[in-house]
Length: 306
Image (cartoon, rainbow, N blue to C red; front, side):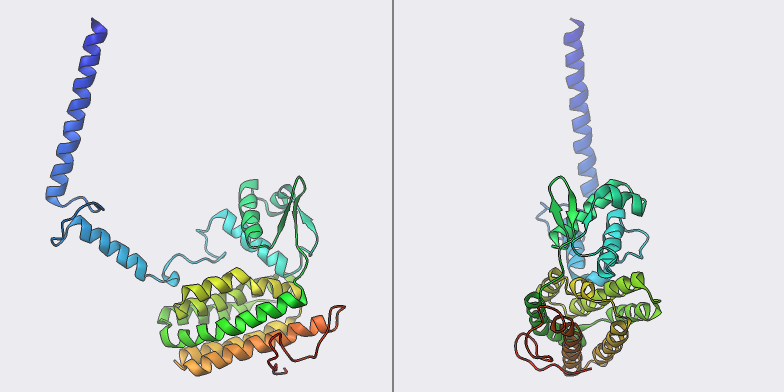
């Protein structure tokens, strides 16, 4: 008898709560206090549908430069992101040598973090083809890129990056120009050493990424990002002169973009890629795989000497 009454009382309470919720929602809609309703067909001024659409449009118009920075120097970044950048730096500075094996335990002890961000960073590196998972043995660092792969990457960059620089000269915002300036200033402030060399490589990649972002073509930017060209190229050589030469060439690119000169921006970017390619190509030509004439890229385009 008691249980029956308990059930009836329980049903009464649930019904009362449901009616209260419905009543509260009705009052909220009538007073305009609810901000989002994706199923509302109303189009009167200030309706939830319009509010939601306005928020969506505002998000679509925001560029990547308006979103939180993807820089390891930002304190709010996740531990996995910081570990990822640290490992990239070590790869480019050759502190982690090609062909070597790394384990989660060893990296966690070295970097002073738990295994969770280490695993997340290694998973990203594996997706980028920068490490190879070895069953029951951790991860292996793949060998350096071949001459054929290098030439393919160079040709792809020559097709995409001058076009991105041209569009950046036409479309870059003041904030994006300031970001390019800040990246170059950070590169100039780096000291010597292998760690600084790896950090320079990350900033080099960031500079080219901001140029591509400023151009507004997401397909070009995504294609360049997937190549990880700077990671592979910086793994090939450690040479302080490379950073000095690249810095001057970057300054030419930025000057043309800031001057709103599309032709000069495309030319400066193409010249930079060709000169960079020529510097790297010499490594292959003096090695066991070196074949072909110096100063010519994979598509037969003459390269300007330094």
